[in-house]
Image (cartoon, rainbow, N blue to C red; front, side, top):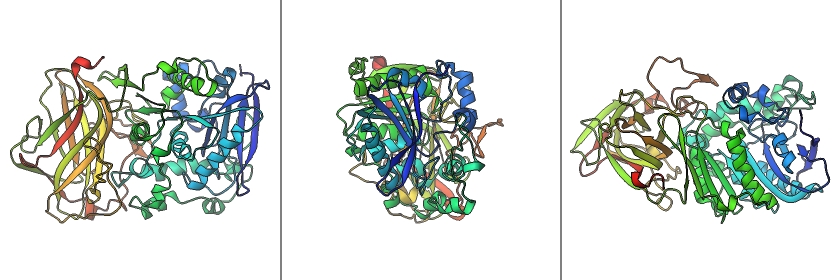
Length: 575
């Protein structure tokens, strides 16, 4: 049964340059003003979740029936809220197709200042409608989270609270170029998820099952017209290898964010994980919270767990209800265990104040991780091979690692550059990898980090021992054979490692892949073997002549290479 509500479709929202964006508004039947939950983005407001994203929808149906219960699901839309679960509680849900996407005309340029300015205008429009209470909250996943960081920094007057659910906050370091290395995701994602619903696809595309209208219409343009009406993302990323103005204008100044904030992150998303931690830490909001969970990146957003969290947050800030949010701990962690279970735990800060920052030294001769610096040693490996793995002995006690990590490595290359990929691993007593469900991949690695050696320059003012921050503003080429020092950021992670298990790190010059014959799942043409679809294989960005050499890792007592890992003391793990 469909929930009773008023639905206004293709409502025009005028922009300052004359373009009119189109929105669908779902709201209660009465005349009482209500707060607004808004999304603004390019995935087409009329595209049915079940049709456009069948793989994800089927996973929800199969594994998380609570996500679909209590709704007809007639209006379910990818990465946005289900109005049938919000309108009955007195909210208006507003979905806006961003400029050039879905039913909104214009030039499509994702995350551009023009697009974010449009978003701010939409917030102000929603806050001044007769049916609005004047309070607008933002809630959505991925794209609909990333643009929240950006628009919140513009301070729209009617913006009352934001909840970016798994959304990166740095266009260069997280979305496009991990450690300066081009991630192939964005150039494949844009055609598969955005360009297929670009405004003007029209009759060649999907239809809204509720109206029968083209989700990317009403007009139908030719292929050359469509191409001329959008930015060429793949070309942009190749044209801009360094963190220049192109990336800066698409990256928020987190210190400008002042509205109440709930940053909901995932331990295992190779696009978004870092952003939710950076957003929480960097925002100037006096009232801010961090929640971290696991599983696929869309699952818990729709589940009873996520819905309860979201409604308690927005009920408090948009409706002034006593939801218990005033007693919510600043940080809520769902700590991972090797059996796939989680331990929910409230904390007061991030990183945890009681963290014991522990050095694990890389012993090049023994391929070991040790608590004491090694004697002088080195190991060489083919950059495009399997690399070299260092591991601890079997643990004699349970050990929790929760927080950001880093590595200080001394390396040399036979060429003028080298890409370094670090994979933090947990091995069971039989030597098998412990894996975790990640964004798309059912077998994700515990943590990763990578860095292009020529982009090792640090921003000293922004760097921390456990979170080095690289400027990525100029190349520092290597002299073949000369040793340089690299500080490699490893994105935040959490895992409780049982006795008898080992901690390991693999160092190589390409993406790590889990061993075995599979079969391995594929998505967007990428075989997923530990890193999902977020891999670094662009031949123009990584020419073999430069990145296919021999890399040598050096570690000595005087200048050791080491990991810095966040160990949480056992006696306080459940405090």
